[in-house]
Length: 445
Image (tube, rainbow, N blue to C red; front, side, top):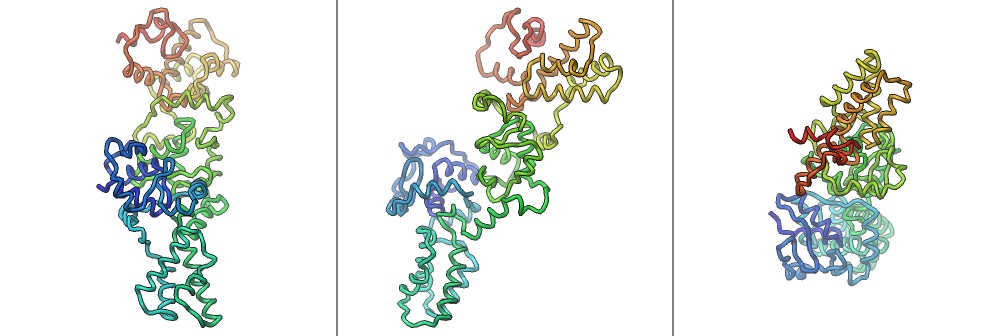
């Protein structure tokens, strides 16, 4: 297993600066060992002391909560580079390639580098080592200083060229421009200009040839259908739980999951909007206080079904149908709508939506009243209400991050000391009924 220090050094050499939490995320995705936190005050990764001498030797410094190459501080470009990091996705190669960046002079092979090297050898210089040195200087101009306008001048100075033809200079300029466009840069988050242009172009919906969903779009839609809202970082965690090929970063401004574009049109088609770094079902987007709604969800665990069950939520109309659903369906079909099964299923679909959004019982019961259904007796209403409450308590809710009220209650009871509930106290399931008339007997059993 690679040392965390090797990741810090490699990422700084590739990116110029890297936030400590991003180091943790990338390290954990590429290694079996998990690190929870890097403490820069104590210079520890969890309880293990970081090798500060090794980092200093590799010219790594600390600014705020970032690891920074000393050149960034020398040139006073930290703030500008930090802002630029927010604009674009990060290039993070596979582990084997990433760790080669421990060598500050390492560069992945690319065609334009070889083209320029061969051009120099054929026209200006035969010494291989001298050519490598010149290319390294040019690459650093692009990588560190975000320059490409004075490459020709630098090249001529380094080679001490005095007489050369106009045609030769024109060809050299073309070669240098291609070299610059395809050289990875700190200012492009480790990508080359050409790579980043292609990624951003692909992310624009007008360049997508069809509305066929990619794998990430499918899981994002399923997540919003199951949870109502989901933060981009939580989505990455859940997606990675189901997939061997991991996502490392989700840029919500450009709608890029690493290099994979996410179609805004596909999201809209599935009633998904954005709220800051959250993806939200549009039924909630006008919630009077989204901040409070998200706070209500934040301390609750997420329901994570198996992969086959999770992807069923790609269907906007899917929900789990347990025995409580079929008991309620049977009663509504037989006793309320005179055997019209299709009508009964339509009513239950609307009831399920209300339950999933944690609507009040009175609002849920209104599904019958708004259809002009008249009940036969008080006993019928009571029996229907009992069945609706059981269905409600076993419905997966957005507010509960996909858990049912009964599951949340059980999880809550596991995590806190038992508190005695009085017979006449409100039932903790949230039904609004007294405990003795709701869940008391079930709890005893």
